[in-house]
Image (tube, rainbow, N blue to C red):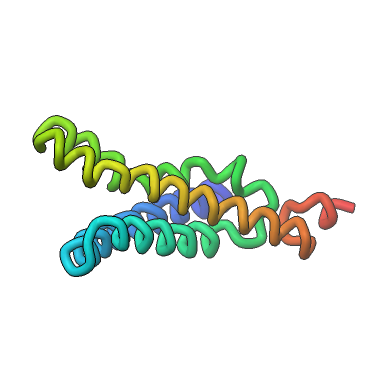
Length: 128
């Protein structure tokens, strides 16, 4: 029961981080342009996923629900953009989904590697 509740809470926090990063994408995109906004989103989501997955040695394999929840605002906005916006707009702003997913997955992989090195939660070293 407790494990399921923790999973749900991590998913909700993931959605919250995704929404905050989407708002940051809009703000940075208006101020600095699309490429800096893409980089800012990837960096922000990297840090968020790293913090959510730290200590979990199998984060990049087992935390897919959290990663998907974090990417959900970008996935939904990209799908809406494909149907509503012109092709030029989609091609200019659509890659934010790729940058978001790359940042999220990189954060999970980094957390996983650090957990394995330090003997974190669920690491092969901790089981011995």
